[in-house]
Length: 114
Image (tube, helix red, strand yellow):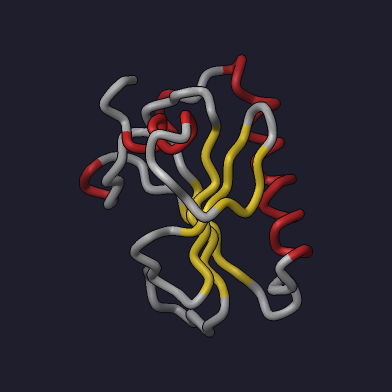
C-alpha cells in the first residue's frame, strides 16, 4: 500500500526508532506513547487489520507473539508485566490500516482500558 504510513516505515521512507527487525517483522517505538514503554510490532506484509488475517498468516502471527516475548525479555519489562493490544477497525481505535500490536509497559494499568 503506497499511502500506508507503516509500509513507508518498513521501506525506510519514514524514520523510526527500531527495537527489532527481521525479514517478516518490524518493531519500533510509538511516536505518541500511551505508556512509558510503547512499542508497535508490525508484520512487513501489509494486512489491513486483524479481521483480514488468513490461515496462511498463522505462522506469522505466532512469530509476532514470540518477538513480543523477546522484546519483553531484552528490554527487561517482563517481570513487572505488560499489555498487548490489537485494535481492529475505527470504532476500536485503529488509526493506521496496517495490522499492528501495541506493547505497553512501564506503568501499572490495573483495570483501566488504554
